[in-house]
Image 1 (cartoon, rainbow, N blue to C red):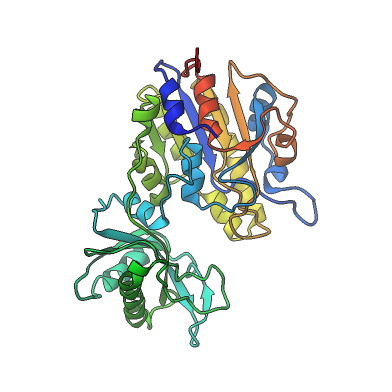
Image 2 (image 1 turned 180 degrees about the vertical axis):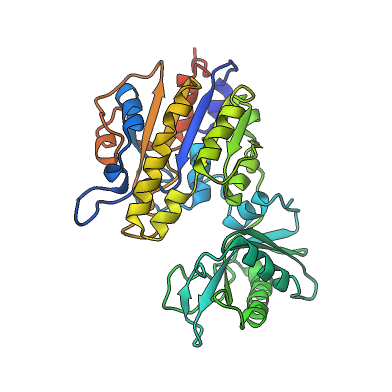
Length: 401
């Protein structure tokens, strides 16, 4: 696996423009009735046309058999080794709402959830409550007091929020309280190292008080914490690759990932159409664009096969708007697979399509898992996507003498 640092040593600047289109959770599994995945069931004539003139393959975000979180999945797409640059969801959520994490801060992602009278989780997302309701609940939780600790509770979006614990000596070596399934009670936060005992006690204190503050709320009467994290130091894409990168994303977490690697965040509306309009409006100002589509992943997590198919088809309708901009390189992929059959992220590799003037077309006729498996790129680590994009943009010099 080539490192971002080595790749950066080969990088050169030119005027070529790269578009990385990420359909979150793109990969799927065959439907029991039709035998087709969500991508295979979708009608995608414009992506298929790019596939015929491009080169395709399947990428493993972290490693074979490993189910990636969104953070590692995206870092890999940007060329960073996700095993070296590890970051939890909490830090990404905080960065996504533009909260500046300090050296004494530990952040954790909050899911507002529903528990029954026995304390059993019945909905890990509290019906995806509106963001406005989330803000009201966060106002309540800001009243929590823990001796020696400064607390910040911020709304992210829908059922997602973030809590930041600020005190000296805190560590992020903590287990999640989110059991990742319904029908069981929330877990206690446990220390994962000897020095984490106090941090675990603080997190459990917050959860206990949250339960009291939310006990009369419906449907969001509990919090689940996951992804405890401090903010790591990550070199920017500008420093490594000599790029002037920009991000178009609607969900705060993905804005946080983009901010972490030094991208400018472009203001955009929430519709898929708005995101493609934002790309067009800013196309001459940057040389690398990360365009993120979130709702394909949400549909996968909800097990809504028809909706995921519909969203993939909607994205395809805007592909002519993208190609009319004449980018030098287009990459279409996902950060991980989220099959509707599993209603969760999975370990399955993700289809990749790369189109440029300089690629060597393969025999793929349709952008799908089954055809990408036989594509010219083969099966490869997702960290190599950045190298391929830069190479096809003629932005890498020769390695060695």
